[in-house]
Length: 190
Image (cartoon, rainbow, N blue to C red; front, top):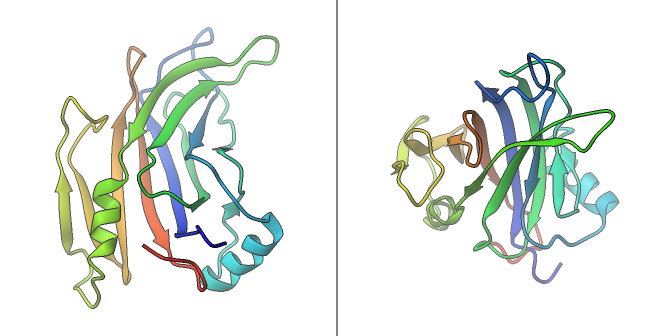
């Protein structure tokens, strides 16, 4: 736990106009990857539940994935995937797949999320802002996968970032996610 900085909760909200990979639809799911993960799942699960009073999925592997949504190119996941963070400079990688029973799952696009603007906002150590206050705005560019402006906001006494990602290496599709940071007692913090 010496290198642990905190927990990053990624809410995978929904997909929009995803590519068709089966006859007339797809069975999409999302895989997220964030660098090297550490720790014991049972310890962090209890600690996380105690701190947040939620039963979000917390797994300490390198890759986490959502459930498969059958026959839907506009899936609603609304799932929390939770990572322990030891290096705030690592990008968060997202890949959408089409689940297949009899063959290898088809890739439906990917995106990379630069966490640095979000981490910089967290390091400002803000508090007591009016709900909805915009801290930072990130604009779409050739160097990111943003489909539209992304706002880092103060919401319910926390800093959150809502992101709409345009998928790469595919003919179409977007995925909406939200980032939220959770400090852990005993961790180094940011």
